Image 1: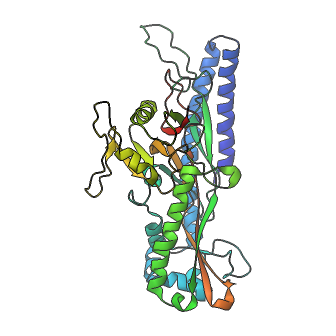
Image 2 (image 1 turned 135 degrees about the horizontal axis):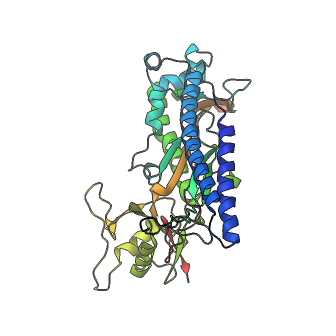
Image 3 (image 1 turned 90 degrees about the horizontal axis):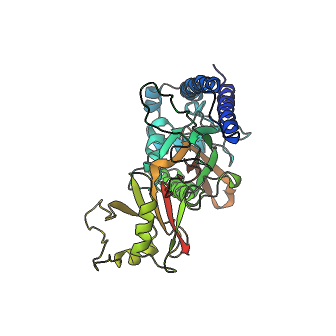
Amino acid sequence: MKNIEEMKGQLFALVDDVRKMVETAKEEKRDLTAEEMEKQERQMTEIRALEKEIAMETELQRIEAMKAQRNIDPEKDKAEWRSLGEFVQAVAFNPTDRRLTNRQVVPQAQATGADGGYLVPDQYAKDILTVAVDEAIIRPRARVFTGATSAGFGQQHIPALDYGVDSNMFAGAEVAWISEGAEKPPTKVGFKRVTLHPFEVAAHVPITDRLLQNGPIIENMVRTQLRAALIGAEEKAFLLGTGANNGQPTGIIGHAATITVNRGTANTVAYADLAAMFQRLHGRRGVWIVGRGVLPQLMGLKDAANHFIWQPNARDGNPGTLFGLPVLFSEYSPELGDVGDVLLADLSYYLIGDGMGISIGVSPHVYFTSNITVIKAWKTVDGTPWLTAPLPTKFATSPFVELGDVS
């Protein structure tokens, strides 16, 4: 088994060396020498090879970890667990059940303690973790990476182009038409990395011990209340999260890569505001994300010819469009007049990192005297915009554009 962290260290060292060489030439106001260009091409070849090797080894170790964690034949597993409710009941009443062997994900002294839990069988976990486009806005449209272990995925480093000072929309790469026999221009592509962390998100629900005996009710509780709570917590964090320092995903609103377009009038959404936002969008799969408080403003919008520009379509599944892009409502959008009450985003530029699955734990201790047991469902996840800054074109654009305060 190869050491992924060592390979990552080699990769980052190569990237740093390439960057240093390019920046040195820039500081000295010269092009790369022939020797430097040859070295750069050689190192870029090594970088690409290491990236492929790391991706392959990561996937192999993920599968091996899954196999070691479960140590159960999937078909046998499916036959042994007749329902999700039966699995939760086993966790609650019989933690020594042989079927729970190798499923415990948090070492502890007492298996039914508040911090204990067991990895949900695959056939049920997939149903809980799958989020359809009508259940959430961000996750179904984002780029999702799956980690290596049930307890967390470790840090995942995703390469990103560096749109820093003195860069361009191609992160410093220079393009030119070359006549036959002419010298090729040097490539000066800048790289950064964005990091995804294993943050835990958990949902709890108290249930009477009598109801805990009812398998179908328990299954419905997990599939509806707990699942919906986890989806909602993710959605809010992906939109408004304050990042790694606070142990949660990094939201789009207020991010360094998000362009803010100031509105013309306080507490108002005007046609000119939306047009200015649309002008700054980079990407082809943008959606408008707005709060319910913005709805009356949108329905009253008119263009220069005094025509209403948006009316929601009564047909199911058709949210109506503005400038050809769908309008989606979020319960977590800021209030009308606050920064981000209208967000225009191509969510394929948002990254999500998932752990391997979802875990279930129970505790009879919190409400012991009331004969109530707390069921906890949790997973590890992180999210962040892929870009670290807007694209520095002549007229800056970004996959994320928010409506701001009055200028």
